[in-house]
Length: 427
Ligand SMILES: *Cc1c(COP(=O)(O)O)cnc(C)c1O
Image 1 (cartoon, protein in one colour):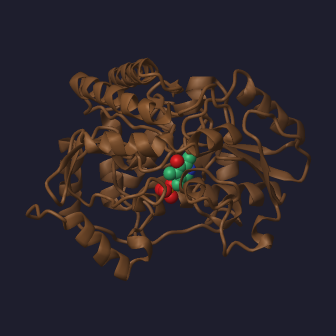
Image 2 (cartoon, helix red, strand yellow):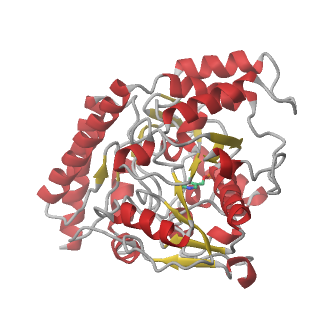
């Protein structure tokens, strides 16, 4: 598309006539930061270009789906080659087997997976499986954790649910969440024998980034074992990002069930859920828990996922971690140096920004930090300098393997300038 000034607004107006709010996922609308979203025309590596020809250094990276950066040549080549063989068949393929083998090989204790098309589907299906396998009704989740938009998991969610100021959602009848219990993160909840599953983001990454406190995940594991509840790690963000083995390897705590998405699809729609073979055997066609999908294990998505995972070796994780460390340390120094209170929590390659005086340990803290208005001002200051952060205060930052040291230094310098501007207005 040829760059035209005013093209973003023009497209947003057109979009708003045919799509609610002009977007297909609410956070993209800029509702929580104000203004008009940029419409992306193309992307490469660490950058996106909008329809007006403006280039942004991109820390959204499809909320972590593009771990290698945009349009990574081996991923694009794999998609191209797969597309030439047809795009979907409704019959099994070798690509599905290879991706499942790759996931199972990467994560200890993960014996079988089923591929789906999104993280939402993965979490929804894993909860159904847990209920079916245990014969119990209840699900325990943590406030501020996001597991996609299945009815039973929408209560007190993070990410867009939090951004939009919606505590759950209209259209979810009380019956759908009657067996969902919401607990504060970082406090081990009381469980009983009605609990089928405890679902947790091992690192909260949809209310900013909130790490588990030392011992929390171990104690949660023990609490589940005491009552025979299953423990589900929602690793849609942490899986294959923290390290090859994800949060289990990082923290040394083994769940019964896992969900994956984002990274494993190489930028195409793909999710997966899995666990021990005896639990997975409860799924149709072997067992009584129904789950299916026309496009599940789609050949383009499995090809993209395999190409993305193929390059995620120890060196890649070290580079990702080093970039995130440089960015986190730089942001903290620059913003504090300008006189603003800031927290930049980081767990390996995953980081977030809170404009807060003290470390954030749960959703109550995260909300207080997100709603003081500073993130919104910071976001626009950075965007005006060509740096795209997520358009909402509850999202993580996603430096990719394509972000260079210079990119990060440029980001830190811009953050210092923006923070200095903000410091004069907030006093
Ligand atoms: C993004 C996300 C989901 C939902 O995945 P979608 O592909 O957007 O449906 C679920 N859980 C977590 C932890 C996520 O970050």
